[in-house]
Length: 116
Image 1 (cartoon, rainbow, N blue to C red):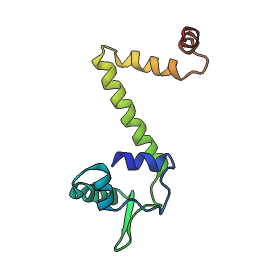
Image 2 (image 1 turned 135 degrees about the horizontal axis):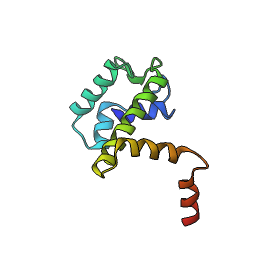
Image 3 (image 1 turned 120 degrees about the horizontal axis):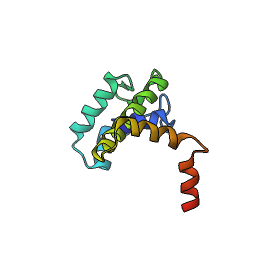
Image 4 (image 1 turned 90 degrees about the vertical axis):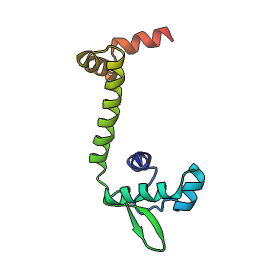
């Protein structure tokens, strides 16, 4: 489900683009078709896709991309913060590291370039 959202946000899946059939996706991913049906239903409830009976499941034009991008970013940051904490890095150190890593001319990037 998250992968479909990510592909939409990245523009890989566009509005009104059909998704693979339940049968096809289940075969491709080697999953039970009921798992795919459940995932498609969750995506439909979230407004990410819509279903046209007899025609398939399609990407919704109603998806709010900026909100979805924020949600994806929040998930990425949360996972990274958990990993940092597992490695003994405090939230303050983590935040400082993010700021440093995202500055184009930061000392860390210059140092990494010299070491490479």
